[in-house]
Image (cartoon, rainbow, N blue to C red; front, side, top):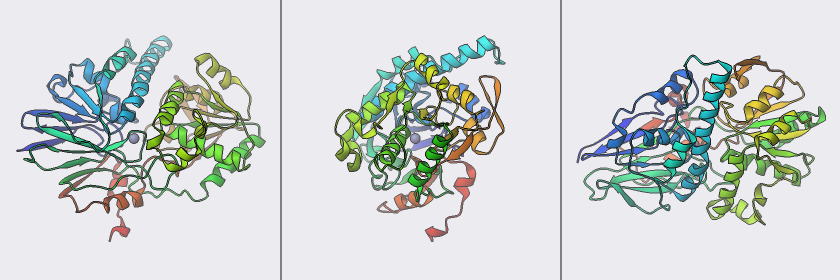
Length: 444
Ligand SMILES: [Zn+2]
């Protein structure tokens, strides 16, 4: 049976993952991600779906990062009525990230209207918190490695990729075998990292979509702990703050775990560690709930609620009022707040207050897409615009590559070698053109 695959996002860019499969009159969408970064990309979030949302029979999700799930509430608001299949971990994390994204959209629109820094009158949210909440009832959790029919004779199976709690690659085929197999790689995790298990091996497929975020780079984890310790100690000596913009789910766990290990090894003094994100705190609980899926190192260390991730002076920050108190409080301290690319969220308040102070360090621990404040900062911008105001940058700006949740070039190739046979066609998705075009001499 003829099937078609249409790339609706994450094509020569790292965000907006969205693929449409049409097979025998059935339409299934794999991922429904938000475009982030450059304005020309973000504007695509407002574009109408190329097929009516009501005509899509089911959605399948690889994992709960916003660039893979962030447009689901809009799809539902525009008429999608089917089920959204995902793993239990993805369902849990979606219950945090989608309402939070809706709330941020509403707050940003409200602030833009109040302060008048919008060209739109009035500025509107892409979707609301309420629309996000009403999307959650469509999520249908399915365990790993259990093929399940999703619509019109198409079945999918989720296989862990070690990228995030619940993350999977999706193997899709027709139940009657009348069509080939396609694997949507989702985002590929790392090998030999402490929180999540290694990516599962590949399995037989005709078509493969593989991410290429770091297709041109190797993550150096060597000396990473020493680097982290040094910059925490140097900032502490100046009585400054280490501000870490982090994706509220995934990276926060890894950052906390690294800080905890440095404390235990007495490489740093125990500082107040503020996790200024209700969503990150919620995600920590879900990581604890699903501890059996995590790396053995974390499972063995567990003694009680969240303990694997709790530093000695761990301080959860729940309310906006408490957050403001932390923004204004003196160092030394470590502040972890989202969003990871400084495109929104509470970290913006910490940056607006902290960037002009040379005692502070801003530490990026993940990929910074073109067009984001994070990219501007790591490229050395002397000022960044936050809430419509230019903020001078005097703080030290640093980046740790090793904490990425994405496989590097060698790890992508390592994973590709686990397939029992080369797929007939392999598409590189979820990467910027230089990373995708990079020659790989080690493949020969
Ligand atoms: Zn991801």
